[in-house]
Amino acid sequence: MALSDFDLVFFGGSGDLAMRKLLPAMYSRDVCNDLPDTARIICVGREEATQEEFLNMVETNSKQHIKEAPAEESWQRFLKRIVYVSLNATDLKTYGPLVEALRKDESLTRVYYLATPPHLFATICDNLAATSLVSPNSRVVLEKPLGRDLASAKQINLDVGKVFAESQIYRIDHYLGKETVQNLLALRFGNILFEPLWRREWISDVQITIAEKIGVGNRLGYYDTSGALRDMLQNHLLQLLCIVAMEPPTSISPDAVRDAKLQVLRSLKRFTPTTLSQNIVRGQYRGGYVDGQAVPGYRDEPEAPKGSKTETFVAVKAEIDTWRWAGVPFYLRTGKRMADRLAEIVVRFKPIPHSIFNQPTSSFQPNSLVIRLQPDEGLSMNLMAKTPGDSMRLKQAELELDFREQFKSPRMEAYERLLVDVLRGQLTLFMRGDELEAAWEWVEPILEHWEQDDSTPVPYTSGTWGPAASSALIGRDGLQWREEVLPED
Ligand code: BG6
Image (cartoon, rainbow, N blue to C red; front, side, top):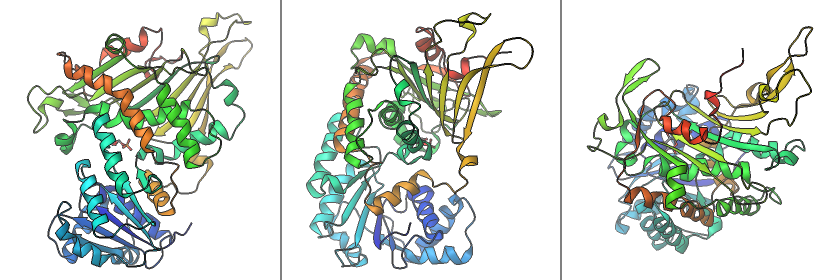
């Protein structure tokens, strides 16, 4: 759908995210003819560079991240939209060129995307206000990390809230932009089939995994002060948990969906120091092999601080204290340098109560629904079915729904989808301030405990599914991670 005219400003416009994700996402919309001719993208960076030098940078650093090599004509058309502005975000006196670059029409949608470290959010917002660049049609997008604990997240909300109303603030969690996550909403609330079963009476446990093969690469500076808990669990994993566990919202409107997610976050059982050590595993990768390639351990990565205690893996058993979910464990885990790249949600149903066949109930695999976000989007349902032949022998069969096969229309990358939503003023897929704080509130005791604790993350070999303690975490409940369940003969 074509968008109305806009000026889109990327702070951190010469940075990695802008080059890898944001500019390619906007190119994709442009090539679909969704952008008005006059729409512009203003990239703001610290570096002194001429317009020409910056466009050369885009050519070298960004073009390669576009899925299908752009045709010269459409690429040139796209480049014409880009304006480079060099300024020092913390120095009000340097904002002149940005004021100049923006069109004066206040009815125009203006979006400020802050792809900068969070300590700059407050100053940038203040400086935008001081230069009269904020109008009721302005929006601000906040890129993660949105704080590093509850206090800093609250501070961000407070600072940004002084300049922008909540309805103008778009807090990005790119996992919400993924097609399958939205499909989960469709699955749950667009069908009658699952909702009656979507509760403690029928569901035994839920596993949510985001596994990556990559290590920390050149992001060590950031990652070492963050770790898997802050980098992935506090945001992406908790957002996925919210979508799985939330009550049916009254509509798909932003506040209805966000109220429902907030209720989940507020119902998460709080950890105490005792329950915490039983229900959380943190790990750190050691050297090993990923895809047959030798890879170094975390502490051997260039610039890794000696003896770093930063976790690159975390597994948590969470519980939701509500009538719907009491007693159902939600196992969440994420890690770098794992055996595979995969993001999936596994909803496992309870076993059948009695077997009428000549097979013990224990030979019946409980039904499960697997919602796959990555690498290929899809959904599969595991059912018991009769094997062909003259005996009544049942075996697990997989019913596969491949969304790519089913709907052939081209996919939007998460960032592309979310940028379009910002430009359209559609807030449903963005976190509200109170949601952000509720997520940090739950995570806070874990952070505090780790800070005071002398123990270090348990090592795991790169290219595996994490430390053995992670299998033990789920194994204590008589369960296994999905990859540990051996296929039947
Ligand atoms: C980011 C994290 O938010 O998500 C990264 O900061 C991580 O550490 C990335 O690699 C994973 O995103 P995706 O979409 O590749 O699964």
